[in-house]
Image (cartoon, rainbow, N blue to C red; front, side, top):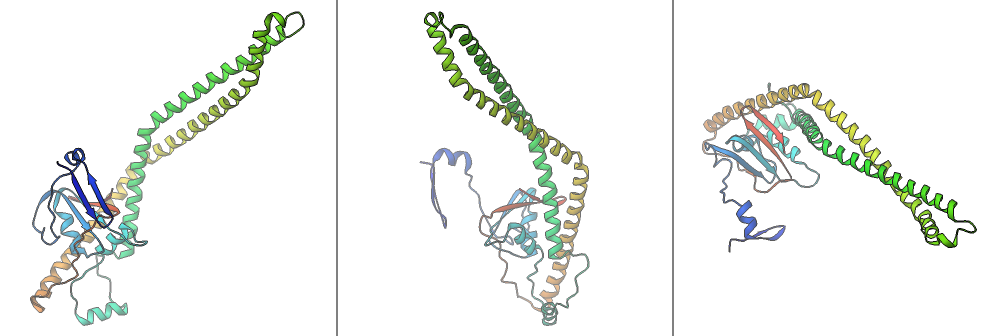
Amino acid sequence: DGSLTIAGTAGTVWLPQSFVSDHVELAYARTGMGAQGRTVRIGLTFYERATDVRNVYVPMSRGTHSNQAFIGTTGEQTALDVLTQSIATDWIDQPAHTRRAELNGTELHRPGLLDGTELRELLEQRYGITSSIEHAERELARIPKALYAAKQAKAKAEKNLSTWEAGIEAATHVLERFDRPLHRRKHEPEIAAAKQQLRELPEHIRMSRGHLDDANHSIDVIEQQKVAASDVLGNRTVGDKTASQIDEWLSDDIGVRMRIARLEQTRHRHTHPGRTSDNGAEGQSVGSRRWALHPTPSRFRHR
């Protein structure tokens, strides 16, 4: 009937035919290394745990339009932690003396590479810049409608307050005119209605004043949000320039890592023919956060 039943570790979900026809598309997956040499419009890569720089570069450079990574996390680890660790990790086999120096902490940092801390700081800085700009854009798009609604609420509260206060004044005038000897009997309905209004209208006035205060507060907050968003976008040139510089650093770092990887892989092939790393964990699970690497120029972008 065109419906689907999806089963996984989190349980089973039934998707109706209407949802499947609109939102489900048949696709095929392959490992990162198996995709080497292929070119697609959009690349989607799944990582269930940390991998190494090769397993980041190869699948994240297949798409000509965009490349997206879905990263699974455990415990307090974030998607950014996994990505940073993966970019800074090299699983190629090393000579014993190189590994010993690494374990002893005596290995010199290779020129042109960013260490894990620097990578994390740059990625966090870039995410902070882009997220601030995107938030400011969303705010400026939202604010006109929100401000209009707040002003409408204020106008309605002011109108109601004026109506109720006029009602109090009119009821008081009725009692002053008719609630006295020789007049009460002829005007009992007017007097009863006026007394009822004097009992009920104070609560309406209190509520209208509360609504008016809320509307005024909303207008003040929205105006402050508008100023803050305008300030962020006013400095967008500086933010974009900083983000572009970070992109260049990240692109250079990946380039250096890949050149080193190719050189070491060639040297390794000569000295240890036939051996390959068994740690190539091309990812398998949907992650909690995704990053996109644009091939030209190379850029990380949080989504």
